[in-house]
Image (tube, rainbow, N blue to C red):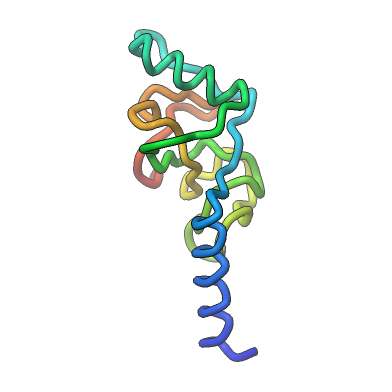
Length: 116
């Protein structure tokens, strides 16, 4: 397979995963920041309790465990499940809309953009 075919295969794989609603589950190490609105606390608890995310969501960086990101995780990765370390700063996972800025990991707060 040449480089162009590989790129196409990776793009198609991400598109298929996205169309099937592939979303990594939250992990037990995520907590809710103090002072988060009650609606956000409820949304995060339901999500952590196994509720499937519906409706609008945010890409939330730094919250996925290794191999459990939702899609591309920065340079050297291709698509879903390719993050290499827990809480990778450039790997994202979908979180309930409006909740990312209130999620805290063992490494610090989550972010709606890659963490420097």
